[in-house]
Image (cartoon, rainbow, N blue to C red; front, side):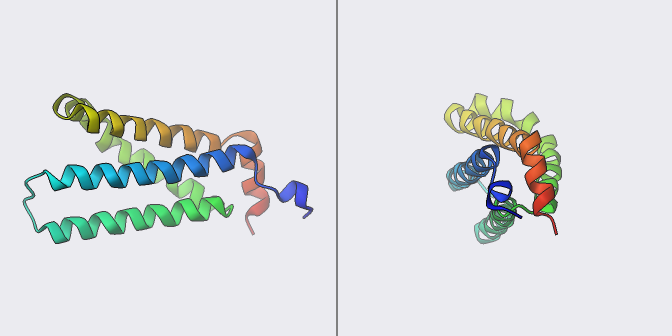
Length: 132
């Protein structure tokens, strides 16, 4: 494979950057929200689950940046499944905590934009060439 055809498309570079930023914003928002919440279980358990979730997400973003098509598809599926729980709660979150809710809504939109960029024509071709 020559260096020109194997270079990462700009859409993928932007998408990966957006995903890293969305991950960071999501982590900060989650920690800030949880720090003020009355938790029905141990805070250690909640923060452990949060850390594991973000570690898995970071793993997928890393693999996407390395051109792994399975990671791109898996991330898309997991993100869409997560939207079923996230999107309906955004309205009440925005009403009760406008800053945090708006930040969460922007995070969701950013992830949708990033995933859309990962499935554009140039991105599709790059992922298909990168898959062994």
